[in-house]
Image 1: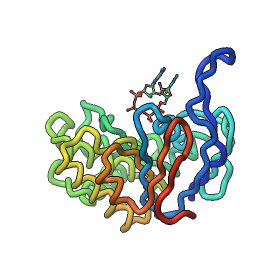
Image 2: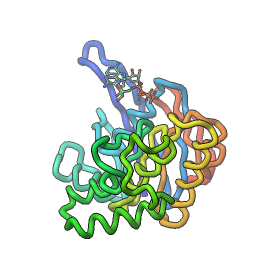
Image 3: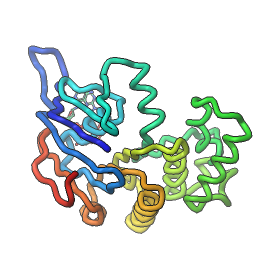
Length: 227
Ligand code: ADP
Ligand code: ADP
């Protein structure tokens, strides 16, 4: 499903370039539930942003579903991103003026889906994450766990093949974090969506079938089944 080959990323001008990724390679098989772990500053977010086509590597290859991503072709990058990848962030990134279902429906606006169909799909997705009863609530009226469920529903609304989650439980207490994690795991199994998740939480990482450990821009350990 996902293959990265010798990715490097360097920030700054050539004379004072700072390498952040120093040749990262790994594969994630379709349907996997995979954690990316490592200390702060090790390059995890940079790696996720490159895989999510929000940032470009300095060198290296990214393959999604066997297709080479042609970095630099904005149109192709955007199509890949929209159709293949769903994002979940630590800070939820919901729009405060929209209610829950309107937030969930947002990616469908850009995909050109009719208003009626957007509402139906969003309500169905809210049901999947156990929040149909809060469909009309705005983010400020929801708990942290509920907000992350809305964000998860939004990430799934275009039926992506891959969910990229950067510290999805980082703003939640441990009980709520465990619940969101269980939901993510359940969606991974029922929908077959591949999940790549950055987490600082060792217990949550231990519950993932695969772990990729990053240190100073390199993969230093892998656990679980490789592709
Ligand atoms: P992590 O997610 O593991 O905490 P990051 O990928 O956020 O690591 O950051 C890795 C390193 O890259 C850090 O030293 C950070 O300061 C640096 N970095 C991240 N983004 C940028 C940027 N846009 N410009 C310059 N340096 C950056
Ligand atoms: P985290 O450690 O949770 O991944 P950070 O606080 O390191 O987050 O980074 C937050 C954002 O700031 C990221 O998008 C990263 O790319 C950017 N960033 C981090 N370090 C730098 C830097 N030195 N220069 C510019 N942008 C940076």
